[in-house]
Amino acid sequence: MSAFEVLVADERTQLDAFVEDYRGMIEHTLDGLTEEQVRRRLVPSATTLLGVVKHVTWMQRVWFEECIGGGTRAALGLVRTPDQSFQLADNDTISSVLAAHQDACMTARAIVAGRALDEVVTGHRSGPRTVRWGLPPGAA
Image (cartoon, rainbow, N blue to C red; front, side):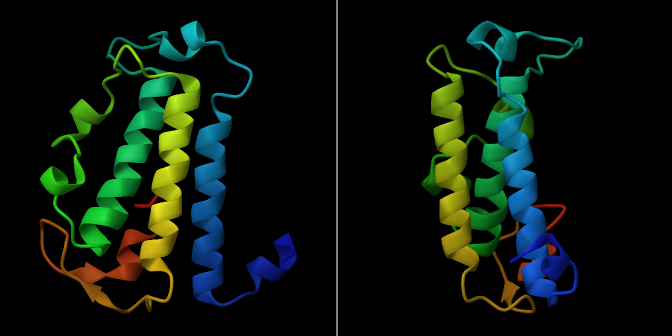
């Protein structure tokens, strides 16, 4: 589908395209950088580029596997808080973090496939919401 066709497509097609654009953009933030560069802290917090991609991967899993899919963070093996999701392990690399992000995105696509945007899901810790609510900007 061309960019123009997406702009005039139905809501679901447009939302899916937005999510895929966000997913691609976050991965491209690491293009051409070294392992040292992606771990460098450029702000006073512990935030790094690799940590941001790791956090976004965690968010993919929270929004789709927990909120829409109904799993719990404990059962999914997820850290409990957003702050923890930025923390890098010694063995985190560009390749491993990107692979985890791509796996999370593939799982997310499978979870929402065939679900109506108005379908009410109950996995969010604050209460029920629709599948639509879990898509942009929350799904980034």
